[in-house]
Each structure stands twice: as C-alpha cells, then as structure tokens.
Length: 278
Image 1 (spheres, rainbow, N blue to C red):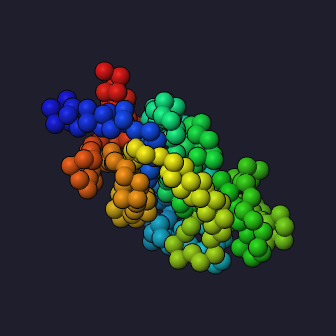
Image 2: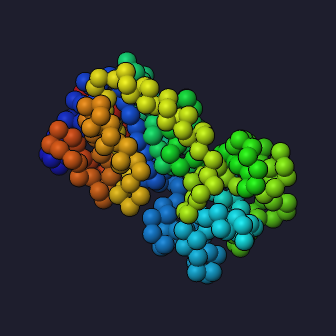
Image 3: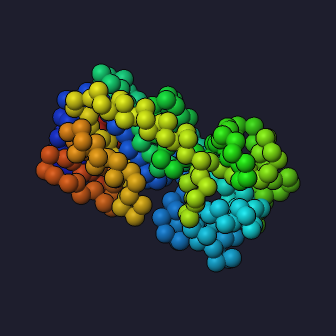
C-alpha cells in the first residue's frame, strides 16, 4: 500500500474514532461493488439494456413520466427489470462494516442516498434511519389519483428482458385502477410524491441537531448529479462535520481537515475498518 494511502486511511480512522455520529452519504458507486450496473453515461446504460441501445434511447429518455404516459410497457420493462435485479442482489460486505461503526457511536449511523435500490434496508439498516432523496423502486404511486405511495412487495415482475417490455397486465393503483409507477424522482418529473422522502429527511435533520462531531462517509457519489454531495457539504457547514470521501475518480475534498480516498466502496471500507482496529 502506498505511504500516502496508508496515511489517508489512518487520518480517516482518526476522524471516525472521534465522531459521535456517522452520516453515510451514498451514490451509485456504492452498489457497483454488489454487482449492480453503472448507468454513468450512455455506454454503461446500454451495456445493461442493449434493447434500448438499438432503439437509440438514453437513460433520461426511459426514466421519465413521459414514457409511462406514452409507452408504459417500455417504461415498466425497464423499471420492472431493475426491481427484480435489486430484489435479488446481495449487498457487499461494506454495508456491514458501516453498521458496526454506527453501533459504536453515541448517535449511531444514518444514511442519505440517491440510490433507489433499497440495498441499505436489505443489508439490515433500520428504515427509520434512511433518507432516500430520489425515492425508492420498492414503493409505487398512482399516475392519476392522490393516493399515498404504497409498497411494491406484492408486485410480481413479468418482463421480456430481450425487448425490455412488460408482459401481462400493467401495475395499477389499488385505489382507482389507473396505471401505477415507481415512487422515484425521474427526469422532468413534476408528479413525484415526496411524502416518504420528506418524512425521512425530517428524521435525519432531527438526528443531526443532536450531534456535535458528525463524520460524513461519502461513497461513490459523483458531481454529475450532485444531490448527495450537496447534502454532505451542508453537514460540514451547518454541523461542524468532517468528510471522508471514497470515490475512485473524484476523491478531492474541500479542506485539509477532510480525507479523500481514490478507491471503490467495498475495498476502501475494508481497509478503513482494518485501520480502525490497529
């Protein structure tokens, strides 16, 4: 291990040892080590969905309320496949490392994530300690009525993966029978029901108010869609927090008091866990 990396790990371990609360902020890079596809750029998206490459459709084209209105079987083909994928994915060992760290701290671990995959809950994090700023694929909402979002647990996925098309009856609202869609903030989305996310954010803000030495561990969150980074920086500014940024491509940090690790999430968490135990 290079001396500079060992020094950075030791400094990050020192920050964590002094913290009274852990704020995990996670982007798409957190799920890549569990085998989930990387949608960064059209190339990564099309590798996962070749049928959409053949149709010349980018992620932004499919992940849109417009597609649910005009091509619902295509939209549900894409989201149905993702739902099935996330249901079957096993979270990598780094999730358990974060849980162990949180268990040792006065205020525990809290999560702010742009991921809609539900991997933190699947790994055992308490749902009340999560804020999913873009919603969750494991919840549904109606495209027509004002019904509150409901769990997607009972939804049976039936997708032609080669054509990226939903087969059989489309998911519908149990209240009015209209087309259902995932409770996810999409591109150009003015109809997203954000009640769940707002309640989650309220609980997270209340927890932060009680912390005196929070440490933000940011995992795989880039600057292209900076929701996660913006929240982490607010913790630094408003709660006197410190930052450990884990990102193989964008690891620069705002000050010399923070630590950047140019690594993948699972490897960095394993090395950092070892450094904490020395």
